[in-house]
Image (tube, rainbow, N blue to C red; front, side, top):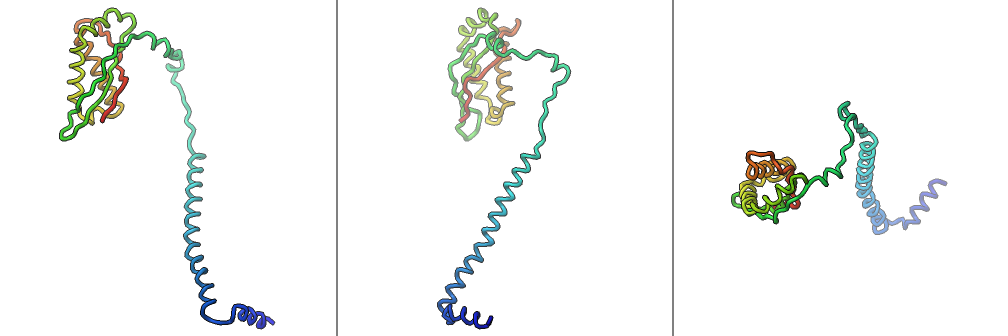
Length: 189
């Protein structure tokens, strides 16, 4: 009986070798070639998702702890500190950097911040010596290289250099008036 069913199946396919049999084998070959590829893609996707999920779940929680001194300090009131300053803004500067064989430049708008109580002393002097200060700013920035103007540390250093130089030029033997130097615009191209 089993032999009859086997024979019927063979006869149902035509029992012939050639056209019909080769057509059935071709899709099987395609399936067999695609199956490993599909399995690899699924495995990689599942592994990536599992790894990302594990990383998120296993990430340590960061706890912010204050030292005893920090805990005793009152919270900083930034709103009143901002209003305690008067600002003097220079015109935007465009200066070529000291970079050989390249045309790189910096575009910056420098703002000087002085205490409100020093406004009457500082602002007229800034205006009176504006040309000299602008010239110093341009020559100082033009002497810098690309490496010296990129990155947070370098920008903070430049702000400090400008602050110290302006204070030295305007008040050489007196208390410095410029508290901060801010950049309203600072672009390197």
